[in-house]
Amino acid sequence: MKAMKTQWVYRFAALGLLSSLTAGFTAAGVAQSVSGQAYGAYANTPLGSVGQTALAVLPPVSGTDGAIATAESDGGSVGGVLSADFLNSNTTGALGTQGDPSAASAQSVASLGNVDILSGLITATGVVANVVSTRTASGLVSNANGSTLTNLAIAGVGSLAGDQPVAPNTNISLPGVGYVVLNEQIPSGDGVSSSGLTVNMIHVYLQSVIGGVCTPLGCLPGTVTKTGEIIVGSASSTVAM
Amino acid sequence: MMREHRSLIVWPSLIAAGVLAVACTDQPSVSMAPNRPSFWVAPPPCPAAKFTGGGRIDPPHPDPDPADRAPGTPGPAERPPIVGKTTFGFNVFLGTDGSGHCIVTKGEIQVVHHPSKTRWHVSIHNGVDDFGETVFASTYNAGRCVLVGLDGMTARVNGQAGSELTRMSACDKGEPGSSPGFGPDSWRWETLATANTPSTAPSGDTDQTLLTGGNIQAH
Figure (cartoon, one colour):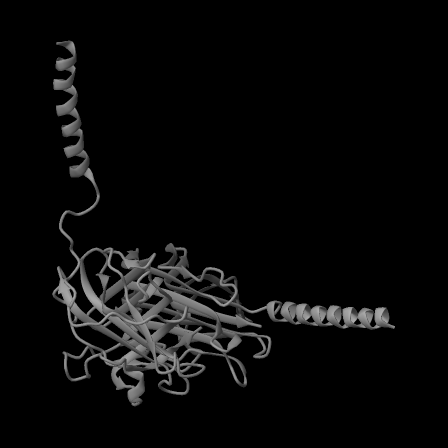
């Protein structure tokens, strides 16, 4: 009888141990991750190209930890394609908070000054791209609060005085060139298992028309082809559970 | 005789080599770090906390919660204000040194003041900044806020152009830290003393300011 009782005690102890181990694995097995990236300028055009300049990429974050990456550049120019100065980027991320190991947050900032795109077609004295992705009580969210353009001017279109936010995904045609998207926002995730946002403050899409013929009977349209792009002020962040 | 001759050659050679080694070392003979104020009191121990954040402030837009302003720091009107668009990113790890004081064991801070085109950068490794000085810290407001650089930490200004003694305060008041509108998270940057600093760099205090964008996380 005593042996049987001891056996049950061992079984309960084993069960308890198994439960606590399982709970430990569950807690440790939460697939949390954060990522981020920011850069000042990028161009890929037939007239000239430059890689992502002042690029900061968040290093891997694990456990309840935090990380940062920064990048800085005094500026430069690529022919008549793009010039800018005072480029600064940072991206930071953290997992877990005091009392809440499932917390996660990533935030990225890219900024630059005196931007000139395509020899004065688009100019701005300042650009800030600012994104954050974080977990709230109602789920995972991302926003681009604090993203602005300063003294933006687009030749033949108009200008904005001072430092101002611009409506997300403002699309403006640039005849003979293509089009530009201001405050281009590209969200990702479902808000439950992940949330992310990329903001490109100025994204120029270069286009050309190939083909197309006109006869006495009428004209056949050509095919619009993307020939290049220029991105100024780009920031991304993502959190995933 | 031969032995004496050798000594005559060897010793001056060694002395010359020593002098040359000292002259060629990378260590500056004169510290470019600003002098630290002597009014502060060493901080008590702190938990092994971490603070991470990044975003933007647009002072003046003060944090209305008095508890978010670090104890012992000057009021907003006591030093020249630093105003205008300021972006930042930081990651700091707190620990306790051998004397029981709260310090930053490692960290990095980038701050950019856009109107003056000033960039500050602080790197902290093994408890000391780039100039070999210990960076003391404290947490307050129930651990939701951190004050980094109690008696200052030296930041490089615009790359190698200069250095300034600086201090940062950050408060994590909720998620996300900057929606809707301003706050609830807040952040502050102070310059305490300058040395060899570009004349265009602002000097003073942003005050504890609500975030326009970004987030701060105590973890």
